[in-house]
Image 1 (cartoon, rainbow, N blue to C red):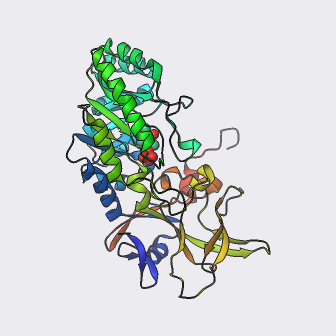
Image 2: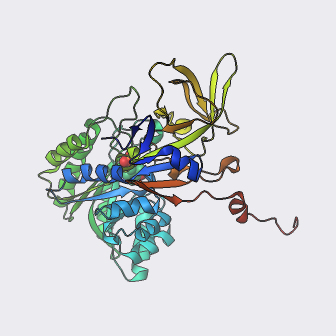
Image 3: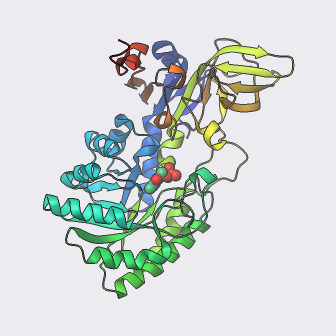
Length: 422
Ligand SMILES: *Cc1c(COP(=O)(O)O)cnc(C)c1O
């Protein structure tokens, strides 16, 4: 069931009318559903309940500590890509032994933090990073558990900007260098080889690239074991797509993904690690916004919203589609109007949708962007000195603000006039 749906002619998040949140917190605002987070995590993790597996939610998709704590309560781990995300995950109560650290540019400072926390594994992406991690671990008198993120040179992902597993992408160890990298790591006293890691892209809409990747890495695991390495874990990354409500291909259901992965890995004798992000958080949130002006120019009908590209950048960055709906259910018979839905930011790229069919809208009406729980608030900025969009978590009939909207004073507080202008 959907947790953002109409009751008595208006849209609710679980048992809270969105209009109530808009009135109390203001707009634009991200609204999340606890029940949806829980359901998505469950759907994914239950597929793997009969095998050894760690589900490490990709924190970058939606990193609010209330989201992380909601998932932590259910036993979820975390995939982090920075020291900041690591601190978030630990703060939210995710145990270090369920945290994996990904990313192409880990600094020594971040490595120290992760080593002193005792995280589960580092996904190492270059020999330079390996050297730095070895030195840091030796310096601290500890041993760093690692997997190499290998680049399988497989094309996947819904958009070129979210494809990561091709040879020309910056991610991972080149496929032909993988065995050499493991040999080098095996000789280091500050490093313990634990597994192999891949992550081929995001919003992937078919099982085929996952299957080809698993088969390819499966062969590599065999070769690594023949060379004497102990390979205990296989991190398959994230990337499973979700439906956004447009006419694009519907991605595979997590249970089909799970069945395929279990079948493809059944003889590998590894602990599986998963890093789902979008799949867990995407449909768990909406962006709630108000129409500032419904402006007709003679050639186009513009809906100018109080949300903008700085609040939700996916349409501008990836040409992404989001379902947009009026919060008040339209009456039985109305003529749909084609709107260009835009924000107030001074960029033509600040366009959410063109010629979108909606019921006739007026100034002050509320709209929601569906499927905005992943890569929404997490990618928001304060461009145009628009205060960072707040976030609200709903739980049944309760809701609370989980990130406040800063004031302009809060924004200016971090800025200084240099001495020669003061
Ligand atoms: C972004 C990312 C993920 C999550 O991707 P989704 O498409 O949101 O599932 C997982 N692992 C790594 C290394 C990532 O960079």
